[in-house]
Image 1 (cartoon, helix red, strand yellow):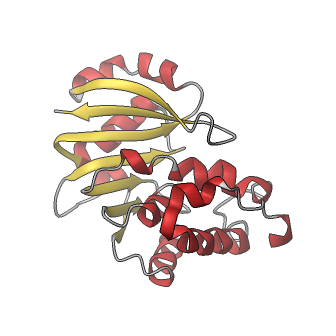
Image 2: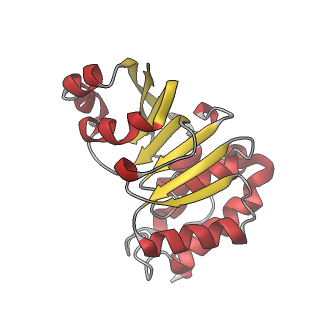
Image 3: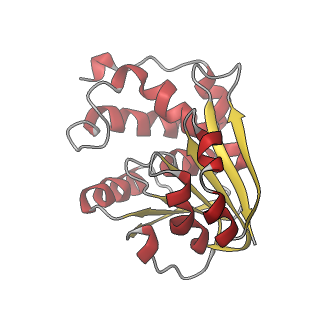
Length: 209
């Protein structure tokens, strides 16, 4: 199946720098095992780099050098990718499904990612030893549903950095009640990767008081 894998775009080296070899190994592992382990769909190999790996890596400059949670980490998108790109930050990958936890744990060990902790839990049930500085998520749920799952995991002054699709602005509009309830502020939609990636990445960023 890996013969259908998308060739590595030239921008990959720009985004990962001296971590590119680790990113290549993770991408190869995901290409070889992702479909059979239910991590990616059968049509994703021809766009694995552009739609998934680089789509997540473009988020790396927004990551604080603190403790970052990835809710519903799944295949490690964006958690593993960001941990590769940002070895100066600590990542907590929160995932409820056992088979995905197995995959994440294997990748952490194989890639020697000493800045990653894997936690098996639903976000609302996660019991962490300390609040997080940031929380991210990709393709998990609508913004109004994500807020109650993610905001309580943050410390005061923490930040949500949630990856979203083209309807990100509309999701913000429909989440007004949750935004007030969970004391979010400076809610904004960012578009990342214009002129760099084939498909831009949209992010809802918000502070939590």
